[in-house]
Length: 106
Image (cartoon, helix red, strand yellow):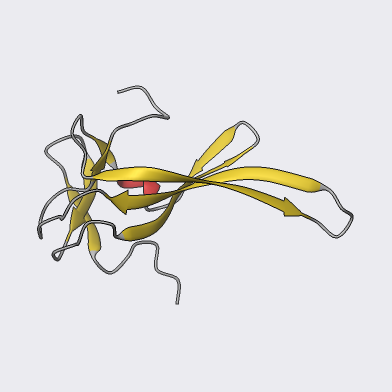
């Protein structure tokens, strides 16, 4: 069954802006929540995980970049990037998940 968010996260109203991602349990530093953004060519796509992350000057997560190269059956190469959301510190239950925006202006 497809789950757009990890079990440890939920979406609810944010004091930062609109709605945000929140921990619904204690989360340890170094936890990889999965893909938040994907870039193909010049277009950046947000996954459900990436769609609700709010900006903070002192965030508790980073977007870890993974550059990918793939080749189809005809030998055409496709380069793309993806970013996974990874915690940089321990996060308390109820704490909002934040990153420092690099794709969008705040």
